[in-house]
Amino acid sequence: MEKTPSYFVTREAPARISAMSKDTKLIVVVRDPVTRAISDYTQTLSKRPDIPTFESLTFKNRSTGLIDTSWSAIQIGIYAKHLEHWLRHFPVGQMLFVSGERLISDPAGELGRVQDFLGLKRIITDKHFYFNKTKGFPCLKKAEGSSKPHCLGKTKGRTHPEIDREVVQRLREFYRPFNLKFYQMTGHDFGWD
Ligand SMILES: Nc1ncnc2c1ncn2[C@@H]1O[C@H](COP(=O)(O)OS(=O)(=O)O)[C@@H](OP(=O)(O)O)[C@H]1O
Figure 1 (cartoon, rainbow, N blue to C red):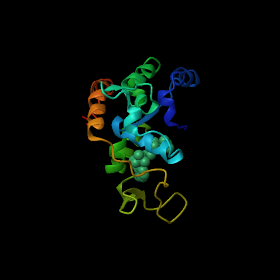
Figure 2 (cartoon, protein in one colour):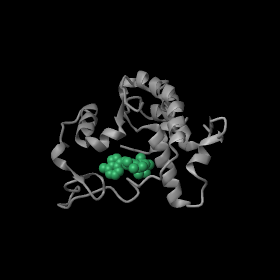
Figure 3 (cartoon, rainbow, N blue to C red):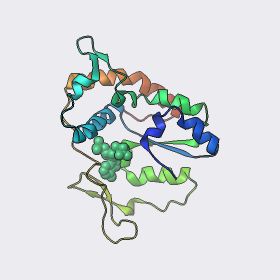
């Protein structure tokens, strides 16, 4: 198993992985591209607090509402475009699209889909998780090889900055057609609209 979020958006990745093994099973975790962009920005902001605001980076021209699609935080969320490249090398049935939202609201359910896809027995179930109120996320009751509970680290589940509602709205409009295309391509409505 190998993972990195950037594979999905790296042009060379599908051909390279296919050359390595055509039978590779591919799992992609996707979340609402607007929240994803804000999350991406929050991560950069934590490392470089002096960057411009999310609102100013979003637009090429704020008065015309023209979105800067060259900004990686925006680019990465155009899932349908990235998926097109993968479907030139892999059948869609060899890919599993995991909902980032459901991974939080129902981790065992989503991991059930992952286990089925991999042809594994459903070992991970509801009984492995609890909701940690302080963290605001599901955590493991017992970490692997330990009897102690385990939550993901501080870099997962950061508080996002408040973003101008109109900017969020404009981004929702921007992504809508790409999201619909993505739902068609995957046969799965992620409910982002
Ligand atoms: N159980 C649990 N605990 C904490 N966080 C959780 C969990 N499940 C999903 N998430 C979401 O994972 C997001 C971080 O994952 P990333 O894909 O950004 O991580 S990374 O790019 O691989 O570093 C992170 O995004 P942010 O909330 O924007 O920080 C979380 O929303």
